[in-house]
Length: 223
Image (cartoon, rainbow, N blue to C red; front, side, top):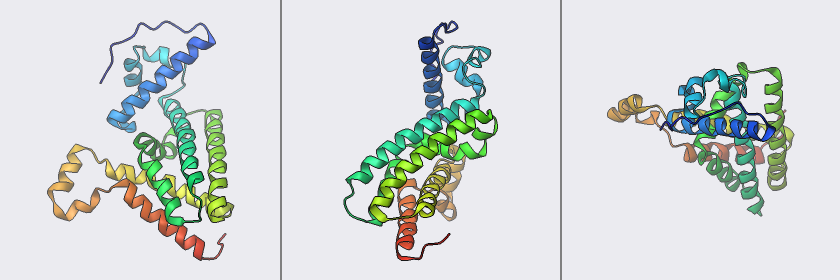
């Protein structure tokens, strides 16, 4: 739902600039939740916060930078919740670790959408410094998650990276499959032969990650 335009004037202090950036990010998140990230344009975001597009560009260089910022924020929030759940696990249980990954990702549909969009286009229309900042955020969170996974299952660096990249990559892909849009959903539900095209993110992701972790824990170290 589009909110009434606010009367925006150019921010003249660091605090005002931060408030404007926060408002822009919240508007983009709201629209992404309602429409899907691919359907949200820079003009849509500007209208949502009552700004002209040219004014919005004083705060973010492109729509992709806005959504890349939201992806970085999503990594921090997901990592904190996942690590809290992993810290609550007292035993080395692949199924329990897989459940923690699957449930925390499935609970964040906008983040799953962003995970799919980031390598496809969000990283491709921003400055190199914006990409660097984003990658540094993700690397820090991956290290923090990896420490908890290593404590529980003893995974090495390569196995930990494989786990996290599988979890986040599959979460993004499965969310896209689970959200085909009304026209395709009607098609899939109208023909029993196409019912498999609609997936439930959490159970499918949980099964995939459980199989990965059980195979990793019983197999040999592979480089």
